[in-house]
Length: 175
Image 1 (tube, rainbow, N blue to C red):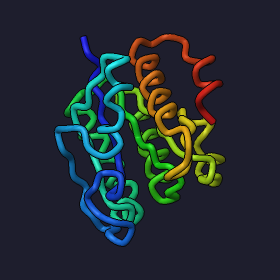
Image 2 (cartoon, rainbow, N blue to C red; image 1 turned 180 degrees about the horizontal axis):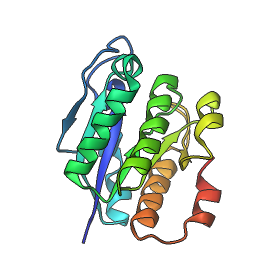
Image 3 (cartoon, helix red, strand yellow; image 1 turned 135 degrees about the horizontal axis):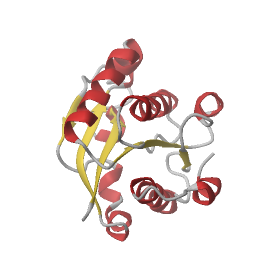
């Protein structure tokens, strides 16, 4: 049985706008978009499939983080994926904040495991969230090692879904 995955993106990674299009409303597509398209070979290794991609503009999120996060959690409850991946946020600070907070909220308010993925440049977010939620290490945008990071995201997704002890995996691939 394949692993059902939801991706959470900002407007840039979703292909719904540029860095200046901050107020893209919360939306979803029932298909892989953005980095999920590049994850195809990684998803095949874990028999994973993207059932939905949820996204909104950074400005939309920052203007009302509690409300947007609550709505994303409700969407997750309705769609019932096996796991949610928030990211990769790379070195986009506003997106990293959203990814970490939303993953945290999904873990607190649903029965679906979630995690974030970002680069080390998001130092403030990492300090605030790395002990609250798994955050997979990625390169900054355009950096080397993205394919490995996408593989790692899928490996963590599989480990969380199968409820195996992921401690050694997270020690290796997470902040």
